[in-house]
Length: 247
Image (cartoon, rainbow, N blue to C red; front, side):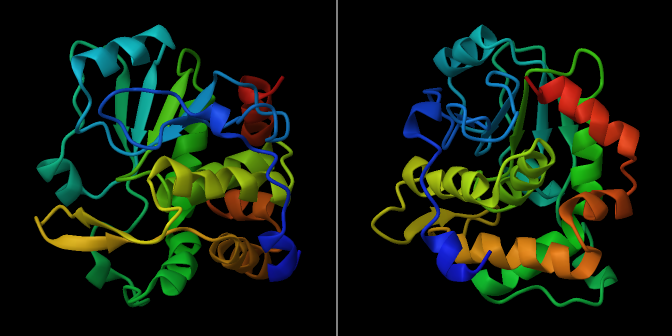
């Protein structure tokens, strides 16, 4: 699929997939409204962090039966903005997407958004593999995967899972781009405060960014399925994921 085809991909996902949970940004069903392959609604959700979750929001999460929250953020982000529970009893797993010690890897930290989307798939494999293993654990669903705002680290993780459930690139792209709606980025970049208290700029996601990440995966590993295999996920685990999340 070319950049042009990605950018013109039909919007099969829908803003109806969003779930209104006070204090949580960009929360939606990863199945959309039926446009993400065989991924069944009500099994896997995606969002920004739960550090602003309100008591009312917690009751709404309780109503969907949430059993697992997978947090892809760094330890520094967790220390500054820990998830809130307000009495919820779900399991919480910390599976950071990026290397905890960035100095321990040869690839330099990217200095722009385009570089980020090549850095992401290079290092996300272990976190995605651990996420898959958790999702197929009995009693783990429904589950919520989140990072800080739910668009980049969460976006790539969910994109890989959607692909394994049979979603097309166009369907994956349509869901990915909904983060611009969920984060108020349809009109362009917006400021935010990072874990160090510094004001930074959150930029909209684009189809081309997703395409670059998926192309890196396919060029490096041959396929997205081979990518998760290289991270240690077995074919039996992929099959179990399809049973757990599929229709």
